[in-house]
Amino acid sequence: MKQKSEELIKYKIEKIYLSLIFKNIMDIDDENDTLQEQFLYEVDKSTDTGDEKYILNAIKLYKGKIDDDYIKMAENILTILLEEKIESMEIN
Image (tube, rainbow, N blue to C red; front, side, top):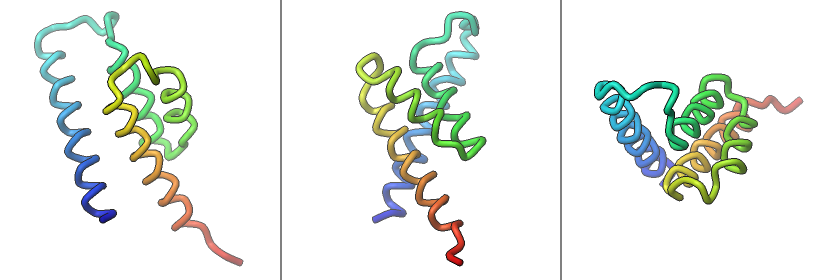
């Protein structure tokens, strides 16, 4: 079950990234980032740093302003980040 949800998350992320790449090819200015692009940037910061605060802040800020699929994807990524932190903890 966990593997299927991770595969679904990866698929959604790839789909979103492909759409962003296509937009960049079409010469959209960086100054005019959409809310979705700004949201994904915050999610990327969390995945790059392993710090969940960026996703948590982005969810609070953008919930209700962008499509719920983005929020759900971020929540799934947040769950994975937290699971990884728990798995890496050592019990003394």
